[in-house]
Image (tube, rainbow, N blue to C red; front, side):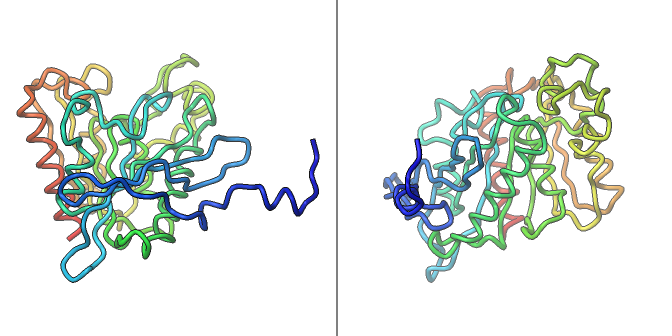
Length: 290
């Protein structure tokens, strides 16, 4: 099917850089939610969207800090509105809680490993940061005070984003129970790491290194917070310990919190301890973006 160029231009959806923002749903505590906001058009891929939880403006209408949240799911699955199964029943939910504390939250889609291989998901996060900077005046956010927070595979991508050279300067990075060294991967081509890379890590060592935060550390990177369960059966706690040591060697400020009795996604922890970890992490981000 063909159409005249003028008609094709007329019927195309507006580019995300220029598309009007959707109407906001108003939640409690002055929080507004803009759901399903397109931030990038990727050729031959689904439109990439983010959800925005926006608090009331700061004192005197000042722009508020921003948290870019990256979901987990072994790079293969997951949803942008999900911070992990331990928080799915929270009312209000974790993102609304962050916004009620005075920080905006952008939780983002990225291409999963069944759609595109690395570095596609990292490119998508960079595109999200660019879009958030472009639209910051409308959103009332201060992109000069931006932290990235990810859990599991999302924590891995958050770490890489914070360590990568680029125009967007981050104030801090939080990785919950995240892998940091993909060169450890087995020779199996069906592991989550292999599906992310497009081949077993042993077969693409250079790409595996490029996808490993421990190999991408640079002086001048933003402060890091690494939080990991000591009994993690899916991503060994050694990933965060090693990354913390390498960051410290490079002079990058880093806090490492290891959690006794905690498996992956905080499985095995009492509800009160999960809430405490969330609140303590939010406090760290508020300090980093002050």
